[in-house]
Image (cartoon, rainbow, N blue to C red; front, top):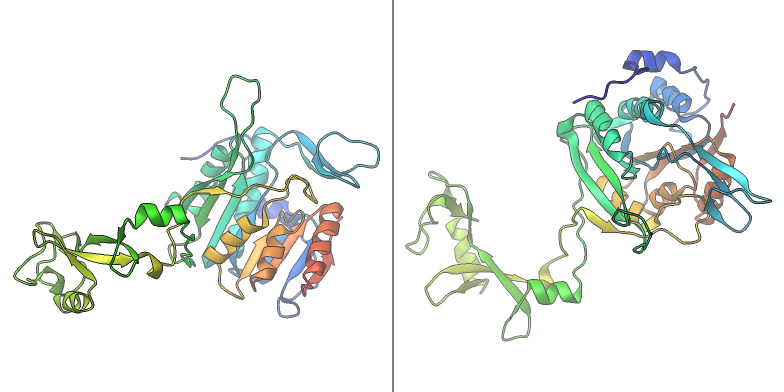
Length: 365
């Protein structure tokens, strides 16, 4: 499926419409870059020299809110100007102009991504479903991995005829099916352990059991053979070869029911956590240093999961530099871009506080 609208350009027309930018840079000169400038021009300049260099993209672009976000001496994230406030950034594009604004940048981002690269695009519920169709077009619907719901705030009690909105969304795509995936786990809570590991052995260890067979029939392999005069149920196979089943039983890791049915023992204290699901609760600061500033731990989770140490992370709408700070803390290289001087000031303060090593460049018009 595609979105068709007036003014939609093909990829060549997008590149031709961007003025060339002469940049004096080399990724060998500095591990990381903070660049002030129009991200279309800056990314085109990078593409002219480097392709396929970025393993992870996290972006939190404007959301088509019709707002001008300001920052003052003592607060951020307000749309009403007061004395002493100055504009941080404008979010006034609407309709097809907004969609094309995002689409143009996604084309350039895709060119910068490596074959093992991923992109996480943070967006809200009002415009996000249109952006998903654009991402299907550019990255391929088969490379869509998740629509992550992020709980962003406490419940509201607005007087309107609709449900309260406490979430936004993160669209997760990859460039190919050979992407970095570290499969970090979420720690069990005490409640999880009681709920998931209900049995207790004679040493006081909590455990549960799972079947020793799995779906799918194997006729010729080891996992389809007899073990202890038993075959797996019809349409299933042993989870491991009979020799491994013997080892498990010898190590007292098989529990036998009164009817002689074997099940594998799984101890709670030997598990590293549970699979991370697609609803995350990471609430943003009530006193942000920059409008719409995102939770640092949220971005760290993304970076841990979808990049490796020394991977290059890109945020071309870097704002206050939260993603850059997260990348720095986790040993990744990074490139941050933004056209706002206020964003640059806040990002530099964050990064310098971390003693980050980076090159700062200004290509603003």
